[in-house]
Image 1 (cartoon, helix red, strand yellow):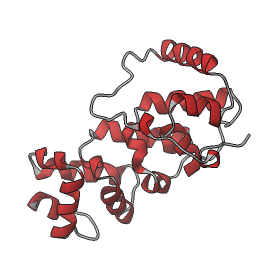
Image 2 (cartoon, one colour; image 1 turned 45 degrees about the vertical axis):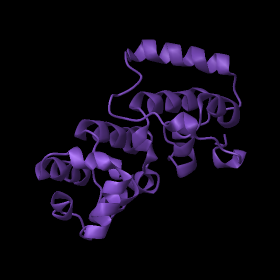
Image 3 (cartoon, one colour; image 1 turned 135 degrees about the vertical axis):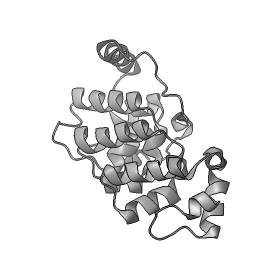
Length: 191
């Protein structure tokens, strides 16, 4: 609790906020030193998040404090540089950190291939949600109007071309496939 309260977050974490974070993600208690937590906050600063964004990110998605520095950096770099997404988008929709980088890249490249995105397209919250929250079948049918058979072949080719051996990155939860949307407009991407 003291380690959390001593973090250089602005605004400071009150005891109630610290208890909230612990309740949301008890794994924070397994972080053994303040320096580990501080390193994760400094990493977010280095990646370009301002103090307010870091505070919001930690409060919305406390698990960010349990992910490896490299893992967070890779996803932020992918979304901000490759997919032209703003850091504020990651603060608004931090669930992106629960998805594997392979999944994000794969779906992004599929949208490029199918003409739903271009290299210069700016990522929006709906586009990010389409990459993260939908099941493969929903992604294919509702977002791209494609066929599952074609997407599976794309996945196979993409993994071979990029030599991804492991679909999961170890410390992340693959909770994405349990989300389903009733409203098609929530995840549609227009051409």
